[in-house]
Image (cartoon, rainbow, N blue to C red):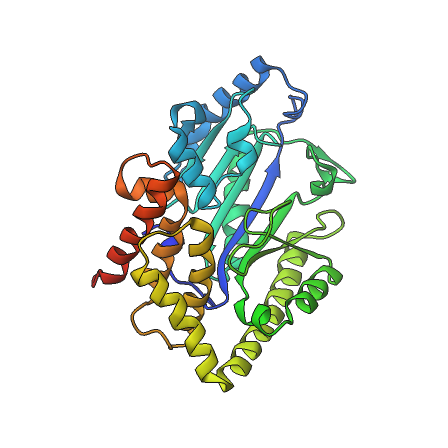
Amino acid sequence: MNWYLQSGKNSDVVISTRIRLARNLEEYPFPTKFSAEQAEEILNKIKEITPSIGYGLKFINLKDIDNITKVSLVEKHIISPEFIANKKKSVAILINEEENICMMINEEDHIRLQVFSSGLELENLKNLAVEIEEKLDSMLTFAVHEKYGYLTACPTNVGTAMRASVMVHLPALTMTGNIHKILNAVNSFGMTIRGIYGEGTQSQGDIYQISNNQTLGLTENDIIKNLNTITERVIEQERIARKYLAKNSIDLEDRVYRAYGTLAYATKLSSEECQKLLSYAKLGTDLGIIKELNDSKIAKLYLYNSSANLQKYVGKPLEGYERDITRPKVIKQIIANKDN
């Protein structure tokens, strides 16, 4: 089963964890400066070593992927929106069947190695990322500076070139009006908190991405330890807020059941409205208020709410209005499925 359909540690609050390592080949300019020929050379070099890397990785040139599939990978947070938007250079991905390992080739850096997991799995994912990186290092020569560490296209990634991030669901902190205190606290501890698609995006459905904003002067272990400490504090505060809301159970139950009722019986739903409703439905499910849903159904509802994955589910392209009337039908199918 794909990682994004599984339930993990602390998954009532932490939806997913990602570790990303940026690497550049010593003999080539950064992607912002290289030529079309050099971009193609890098692609061929990576394609050649793919079988030796292992982990079930397959090399796929992005030009061989249809647009709906590309966007579906963005919606799963496996590749970046910027990656599919760039039509000027040769780009590819290395990805395994479970989709918990994905390398973007020729994005902002030559190699963006990413590993993913549901729930809070910072330490295990860091170990996996380092293990894969060491294999790459044995076959490629990376750009490294004796003083500054790994060199990257963006100066903020220099050093370990590691970004660790967790996706958190914080509906109770939002409902109690304490979300801004938490956001400020996270920023004051040297972390960045963003929307669900990373830099420059807004929160949707009370979901935020917390990540380290320092890569220079810290070890990989320091980054993981700091992010883990902050995330555990956020988890604690969200759970306290949920207990507070549960004291006035009628109001809380009314809100989550209204959301569930709309999801279960609406005949037309936009992705944005559905995302808001799912926030309350997930909260109600995690607190045991909504018995009709479980972790597996919630994960599928989140995945197939998004436009491209909805089209993948039904197996055909849909225009905007068609998506809005198809979405509730798919939601009903997922809720009714007794195998979930």
